[in-house]
Length: 411
Image 1 (tube, rainbow, N blue to C red):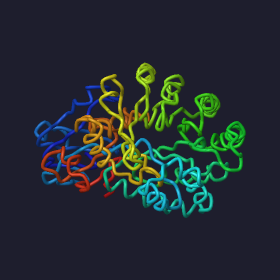
Image 2 (cartoon, rainbow, N blue to C red):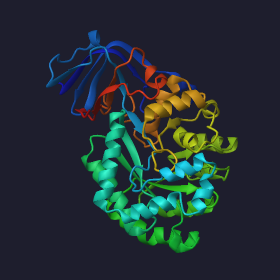
Image 3 (tube, rainbow, N blue to C red):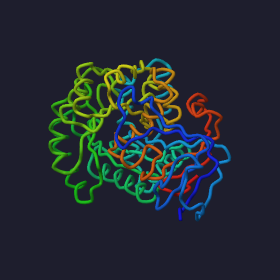
């Protein structure tokens, strides 16, 4: 007998497969009218037309969808959810013409958040992050990656990773941890990248390893931050400590981050506003997921990357929110899909695939979640919509009425 049956679904809409979907295949969705979903032991036992269901009609719990549309829960594969402080004043400065670089040079930017995050207690960080995560879940996100990177020294980075671990243990959503110690240079190393990298190698990595506190290691590969050569050193050491590479690549310039990501076979390369064609070709051959972050381009008033470039190169393209206090102050994946369609030349089907199955591929979870099919984790959202595209079309409106994460009804 199933634990949960969801009946009277007007339409079930989902990408399919157990791997990321590349290129034009992102438009291929399975759409089922008059559907139902049966869930057992936290996994989908059946997802299809009601009249084709041959399992038990009884369940411990039944949800009447009453004509709502079922979609996979969103997979937000790039966030910086754990932080303290507020940078609304910097937002105002940018609205008055100051650039992101100018604000950073005057002590703002990442360094401003580092100061506030170092000062905050673990309990304070946990309370703030828990509220943000609940907000994301209410908007339909059921799997989320969270990075460290606002500590930039051993104790503070470990404090952030411990909070991410707490969220992983207590949240109904799936939480994946990434170590981003190489986010910026702390003031105390006076601009010496090698001194700071040594601190990461000899202090931070040995603290992370015993408790397996992070699945991935990320780096901000940009002019004035960390070079491709720095990243090579970082990833060589990170692999020794069981962490796989991810790269913040070519957000502000064509700095070689995309080529570096392909070289080290990064799981994903993220941002990519200035990615070269050669770098993207190398990424495709390496199997690296291209994660686009429209919220950052929007809030920094930058040109949006053209998603058609990535799709035409047959890349696996994901969308993520980049939720952070400086350049993308939202975890709303519905809004990311709207931006992708309105400003990045994605179709609605491509945007949905990028925000679900391909986001899961960016976390090596495409065989576990990201689509509504038998055997996968039961991550389902029920939306009050007439047509499924409305979740993208009607920006600023949240149609998500129920969220099921791992088979549990959580909102």
